Amino acid sequence: MKRVAIGIDIGGTNTVLGVVDENGDVLVKDSISTPTHGDAKKYVHSLSDSINELIDSVHKLNADAEVMGIGIGAPNGNYYKGTIEQAANLAFKGVVPLVDMLRENFPHLKALALTNDANAAAMGEMIYGGAKGMKNFVMITLGTGLGSGIVVNGDLVYGHDGFAGEVGHTTVIPHGRVCGCGGEGHLEAYCSAPGIKRTVFELLAKYNDGESELAKYSFGELDSKKVYEAAERGDKIAIEAFEITGEHLGQGLGDTVCHLSPEAIFLFGGPTAAGDFIFKPTKESMERHVLPIFRNKVEILPSKLKSGSAAIVGASALVWKELEKE
Ligand SMILES: [Zn+2]
Image: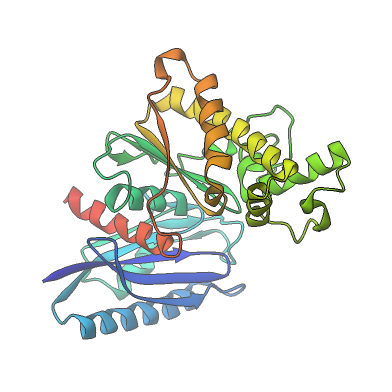
């Protein structure tokens, strides 16, 4: 018997899902569009169809594959209730009891669990990735936003309401940049991919630098990949943008270290492709900001999850964790 789990990642535009084995390899996968309007019922119907097709195709590949459960990563996913609550970038308004709705269609599955995407990524790192065997670590996902998943004593920290672990919305600069959430000076406004872009434009304006290769891009065109490529070619604005990003990220992570004393902090997402340009200033800043007792004890490591499949793999990891609890 080959045990497999289904991982589902619900994004604003697409829902990707796949069947993952115990090594974290994706055996089959599919994608459906996340509706931009309409109710959740219709969506759950097409999601269930897609799940059934995946189960069929994995059985064709391996007749004795046993599907153990479904793990879901979704914005504003509440692990305790299995609900998606007031997700700003999804069409479903209010509270959607997604786990209960799926359980009606898949009553025979042993484990069904849902959490937010960054928590799912942390679970993926713990079950299949670089955090295997670690009991205390933090996962930071850098993308459109800055997500985080916190693991303490081998368990994800969900907090009393299911929403704990929002490092991205802690304040690093009083009355600083306006964050996507409406708050001011949050870490996400500086260290997410759009945050890096905002820093580049501030620097271009500060130095009135028409020579930088980044000066030719409009705000809409620039992304963190272009900043990284420019840094590799020695562009001063690009390099300073990563230094500033690392300074803020290290400050934020320094606070996280003081709260949690983790063994390691993993960084995941597009901007981490910049390697030392972002890792080095982040590490330096973190060491400067922490209490001496924590110095040189906490590693900042690149995630070992493959970027293409990390969302599915992370979500599927929830299933193995649920089965452990039985
Ligand atoms: Zn915020």
